[in-house]
Length: 419
Image 1 (cartoon, rainbow, N blue to C red):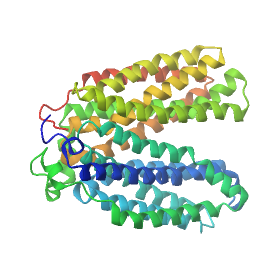
Image 2 (image 1 turned 180 degrees about the horizontal axis):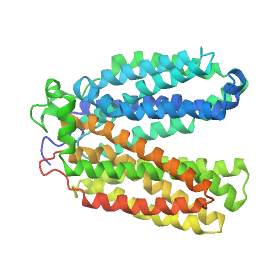
Image 3 (image 1 turned 135 degrees about the vertical axis):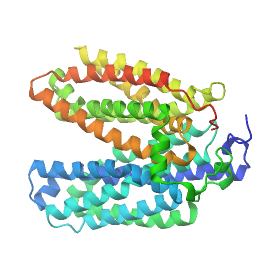
Image 4 (image 1 turned 90 degrees about the horizontal axis):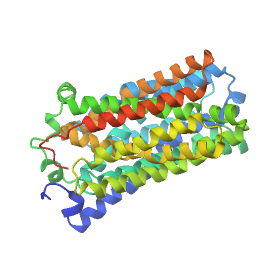
């Protein structure tokens, strides 16, 4: 292994400890990121009782967040490449927490809409910067696990979204926004003292001329799209985003219609089992890829591909069976092995892009995933309006996963890349 390859495998114990401290700190930020963005969906009744609105207007609250978040992701990623990643993270957390607190004082639909738009602006700055900072610290056989743990924090925040509805039900709809807004602001102040940039030598060792002053948005975009590996990664992440939204959006409906389950039972099978298994999958996928990467430089491409080739027939089988336990097992296997891709997406990006533009690259991936994922949801709704069985959507998802696996096999790492 080259001396330049890994901060976490060749560095002093103190640097190794700091690398894992960064993951621990960002695990909490990732949890707050997803908790703050999704809890509004769990308190619909409380909000509508206080601020009357139509279902279309309530849906727009989430849609405007997603549109803003996706459109601004490339520029937000560039900020993390151009300036201090840690400061972008802290600033993003502080602003979105302040917006969360401000949401508690909204009295009209228009005010709520503005706060969701501002939430999209501030949260767009977080994930590209966070993942880029993690891979700055973890350059060797800990990279996939480190990013997987961070994504696990985001998944935990998503699964805790019910807390918002619970607090709103027992108090007022404003209280969860006040509580988590204050918690986020206080945690941002803590990060000022503990979240630091990776040592400059760790970045300079892999790519010469990594000065922040040399990073410009136009040159970043040109560099990224000049690399075939990045373009393939873009299609891979976009198609996989469509798969994710198809399954998340229509799985409860599938359970209800095909197995005559109640709304509560369908929700448990579609989210409870899947989310728990997905959390295991993202950690397992990170650990396995790191271990395999010690002997195979393409491990972080091959493991997600293998995972998708397992997930695809599992989803197809679940979509055609008439036996509920088989359907549950099929989607659980999907949740486990599909998450191998999430744990390794930023490490894959590191294999195919210039180190200076990693955060910008991830921002562009985010934008494409949001756009394609949104189209997937819309197309699914159109098919449903034409009375197409929801199982067809999952069969489409299965085919797309095979396509995604094929794309991963085609990607070739840069010959000069050093992890």
